[in-house]
Length: 263
Image (cartoon, rainbow, N blue to C red; front, side, top):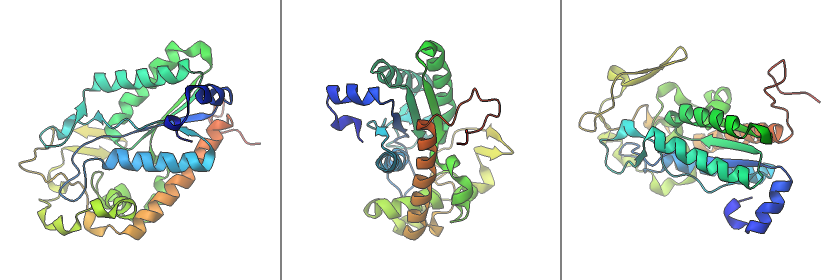
């Protein structure tokens, strides 16, 4: 169910049912010479809408911009500062809470957003703690990583404009993917990484420079539409399952086990 299609009185009635409200988050930023600028928010929104259709969750309009300062030298990138992004999340969620919604799912397609999302969630629960709200902050890929690892290279070959993102765009919006530009990809990031994810740590060296790097971190040459459809389906299935459990109150941090309840 899309929030934008409801009237305000419809929204009032829906809030009484205590549904999960999914807020798609991502970025408008460079994705190399092959992919369009809207990959991150496009994929997060497509997944959110599909999950909403399967679960009955309400899906808000996507927030098209995120924290993308690392791509500041790449034309077309539009970035919030970290403080602006956090303020935007606070205001979006505050509006939903004032409307009576209590279960908010921030579903993200751009991993640098995540730590800011988590901080905003902490602050919101602190501010509205007497209203029995719960906020999920997640990047979609990590919600079904094991399943995605069985399909292709996933994030093992890089985390930006890689095989996985390119495959999903080939499946969902093939007219926007320019595979003929593979030859324009400069050298791989592997020899000179600027950001690494190693043993649970994020290691930041310096922002990438468009004069040196093409903006691709991974191997999009491995992408296929078939892989993209498989990625999309497993993500929607896994995130739908989580959303239903969240709706039913099974993911409760106050449980001693820290795990979902079982019926």
